[in-house]
Amino acid sequence: MNPTRSPKRTLALPFLIAIVLALPARSGGPALYVSNEVDNTVAVISPQTNSVVRRTVYVALGQDDALGVIDVASGKMTRTIPAGRDPELVVLSPDGKVAYVSNEEIAHASAIDLATGKILFSTPVGVEPEGVGLSRDGKKLYVTAETNNTVSVVDTKTGQVLHTLHVGENPRTVAFTPDGSRGWVSAEAGGNVTLIDVATDSVLGQFPIGDGKTKPVRIAFSPDGRLAYLTEGAAASVSVVDVARQAVIDSIRVGRRPWGIALSADGKRLYTADGRSNTVSVIDTEVRKVIMAIPVGDRPNDLLYLP
Image 1 (tube, rainbow, N blue to C red):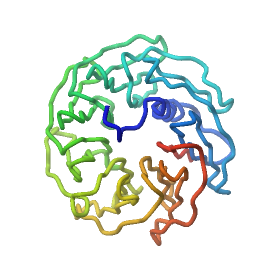
Image 2 (cartoon, helix red, strand yellow):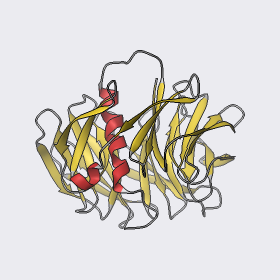
Image 3 (cartoon, rainbow, N blue to C red):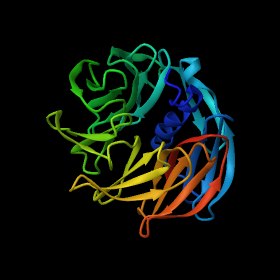
Image 4 (tube, rainbow, N blue to C red):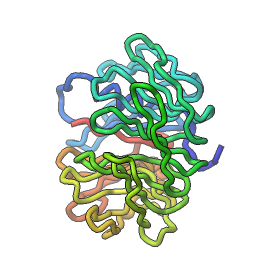
């Protein structure tokens, strides 16, 4: 395994993200969930006070070939669901009934019925699949493959690969513009982003992030879709991209090895998980500066903001 890749035990968080979003709205205000990959915890931050309010232990599910269902209110994992060999990242169907995972070790993408635990399909995709994303209507699954430098487009009903798209080197993330019309694929080694037309599943083009030598990983879009924010682990920064111009317009210094990224519902606060600093950076998006670094657990990796 590439030593720059996050350890498997952090991969419970993407499933936590999917499950939480399928639940009824919580009371008590917004919360920011931060996975800490070395000490196997999730720190829960109150955005109102910028303080850690709770921690929850979770299971290294990538090693268990399973998904874990974590009850957020109690902070307990209530059950596990078989997910095929080595589940890497997870996304939930719009109706909350099916989880789609990238199975890194066997180069598959799988669909799991969350009620029955049945694996609906397990389809070969590119080598070392990682990032997964769903079209807005839930009909197509997009899976990045780090070794092949491709994105497989999978029919979510049949499991059939509809298209294989060539993208930048070492693709990490598939993120969609707020209107759902475009997919953005970050290429960590390539230092660029590939644009995909979701309607036709065609590659529209590619543009560099800065000088093309940076290593973009995760992507978050502003609510109005005008800006995109990309974490760059090696550069300890976040690039601010003008979506219409497909150009970097600013760079924000954060902690060391920023990976995960999350944006508040109003777009005024941006958060990064700074894996080598053991902090979460809180960014004021109007002035584009870090206003606070919140200590969390050992090696924070991913983030989820719940309004």
